[in-house]
Image 1 (tube, rainbow, N blue to C red):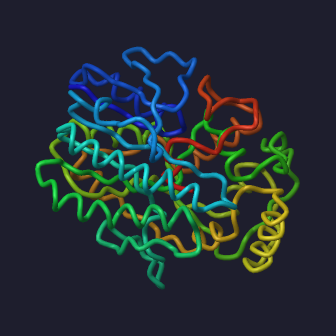
Image 2: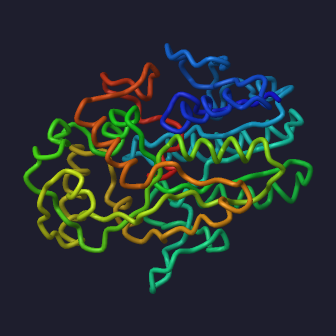
Length: 348
């Protein structure tokens, strides 16, 4: 089985290509990225290509592939949503249509918890039938939701292609620390203090709670979706649900209450001054995300995470403190970074 993975050098991509290469039913894994990495993964061949409109045709790249896993995503510049739309939406459509022209039988797309509409008022976890209209105030959620609608039509037009949509919660691992710091926090984050006992206090934003997953566990779900005859969407998440208190417990820090409105105002001011890359609309979206029920992934993919959400975040924070990364352009431990990655997100 030959599998092509776009966005193969980022957080999700490096884990997905490793998981696929270790599967005995997969004989050939091609990792695609704009720039070739120094990272060596046994069983993985690297190829340079750009999904942006106007770039080289992708059909030849996908010829002979049994499956394409689409992870490529651009998070920045957040001040220029037209640029991210061009790559994330129009570029993704180029990938989907090239799969159809090349006769690829399986398309696994990295959607996200961010594709979902705001969660129910009672806070109950939602399954894959919850509406995927995103949050209109954030570019990331608009783009993820638009691609859900496009895939609705794509599936109808190409019933012979087995389309799978993965909707993970926030994905973390040690090697993603430097990349995610650059993408979301920028240079002001005191990342050297992200170690138990060093950070005195952590702002507790009212209403903030989220779910997380180790990236390697998400990669195993992607692998299963490639090799098993499954279709449709899958929520991916680990227990427990996290909040600021949980993060403070990991860091042995106290919490300082911070109203959501005050947090948004501070983020908006910092974003307007280009001090942080994360736009305030992203915080609005995160505060409204539904909690996910991953029962379908457990039952249909025979999947279960090996790490808890707490363990995934603790590993990430350890990597943040140590400035860890990997030998790929997105995950590099040093340098300014590009804001372009595999899907972090699965989630923002």
